[in-house]
Amino acid sequence: MRKKSRHSIVVAAILLGGGWLVGCTIVPTPLPVVPVSPLPAPTTAPGGPSYAHVVFVRAIEEESGTWRFEVTVQHDDEGEDHYADRWEIHFPLPDGRTLRYTRELAQPHLEEQPFSQALSGIEVPEGVLQATVVAHDSLHGYGGQEVTVNLNAAAGPGFVVVRK
Image (cartoon, rainbow, N blue to C red; front, side):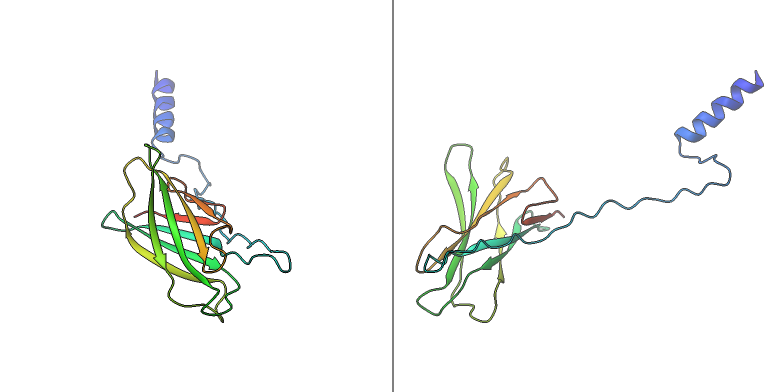
């Protein structure tokens, strides 16, 4: 009878994390680090259009429940007549429509490439779990690389999500 009750105590200690392993040290293992890096901007053929490319997005859930998107864009800005003039966040809605948030860029970034800008106060509709971020160029319009952000994932190709 005594053996049976001792066995029960050992099993209970193991199940409850009692650590009855003599001479062993339990060391917590850190969670794996997910490598996060920007996507390379696609190259264009000589003489071809120079589109604005989204190369990285950081989506941050704010305490208020809204989101802040920090977007990194790559574009060969040439001056006031040809530069990346905005980026947009597109949320596909269940009814087929698209909710858009736009971050206007007031000036060329001639010496700063790639460059990052943020937009806060973004209200993500309930049930919407992804957003596509696109960039626009004042001369060629849309057509560059996009990044699709999965708001349920911690990270993915070209994006990271930070939850409160």
